[in-house]
Amino acid sequence: MLRRLTFILLFPLAASHAAPPLQPLIDATPAGGTLRPAPGTYAGPASITKPMTLDGGGNVTLEGNGKGTVLTLATSGATLRGLRLTGSGDSHDGVDAGLLVEGDDNLVEDNVVDDVLFGIHVKQGNRNRIAYNRVGGRPAPRGARGDGLRLWYSRHNRIEGNAFRTVRDLTFANSPDNRILGNTLADGRYGMQFIFSPRAVVENNRLSDTDTGIAVLYSPELVVRGNTIAHALDGGGAGIAFKDSGNALVENNEVLHCAAGLSANAPLNADAALTVRNNRFAHNVVGMYFYGEKGGHRITGNRFENNLTQVAVSAAGVGEANLWQGNMWSDYQGFDRNHDGVGDTPHEIWLYSDRIWMETPRAKFFANSPALELLDLLERLAPFASPSLILRDPAPRMAR
Image (cartoon, rainbow, N blue to C red; front, side, top):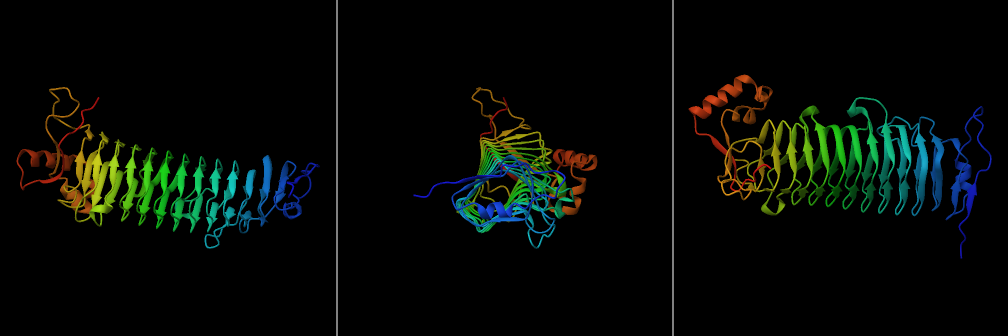
């Protein structure tokens, strides 16, 4: 039976000397062993190619030389914890990162990754757990940064409890069946983007101050639940955006102060519609925006609170085919005379003068301007043309 061996470096590192390399200590640790280096700074880059535990105890820094990736985990069944990884290269083509994971069933937890281009890159790795790490990128325009986390051709990974700041995106490309739970991100371009990555579970994350919150492209069957997304305003982004990614469940999220709370195109078929229920869309420029030739999404039990425009569409008739039921509308003007919590009359949204900016993108600059507000009032008093129905909610919930 193999014995687990622990190697501990017993002497402290002298601050006046150049940092010693970490690679010889890794090479001297047998497979299945544990390496706990003495506190201090070590020179990278380094690579782990066998199952082992590298535990820095929160007091070990691995410093790259400004070229390439700081630490490569090219094995399966390893554990990496308690390290600070810093000083990667700056090549986007080379995906220079703090940590590269190329293996399965690894545990990466409680590490700090900073002053790097890309944070953590999982490349063709499955069933890894990336948990409770803190990742910070380099100050740069958002599009020039690297991803805080990138998964490429990787599945069944668990991304949990990590904190990302000043990064570009969290990107999942060709990576189905992953779970992204309880993470935070502030100051990024896309909070998360899923590209050809179906069946992900995205739950209880907090995203703020991004251009777009969660973008889902060609990735059906996602579950987006319990997330808080706020201040996705730059570049006309949305809190949650779907493109050709149907049969998804969007529930119990809070989307606050975004350019659009949720945007989606029409489903390709009835089975590919979205189910959007029990969410709160509040103080957005547009609560929901739909584009395409027809509707079909199921939108029930949501709260639409004080959005400048509650629902917008790309053309007349787009949203009418959606199913609207039991939503709460802050601008509902009906009564609840029997006090059952449901409005006595349906809630309807019609296109009047606002169809000008919805159907003519260049006119969007003037949306909610005094001129269009006046024109909208005149249209409602004496319509120049028949208005178009956007939606009818037959049983709107009353505000508490």
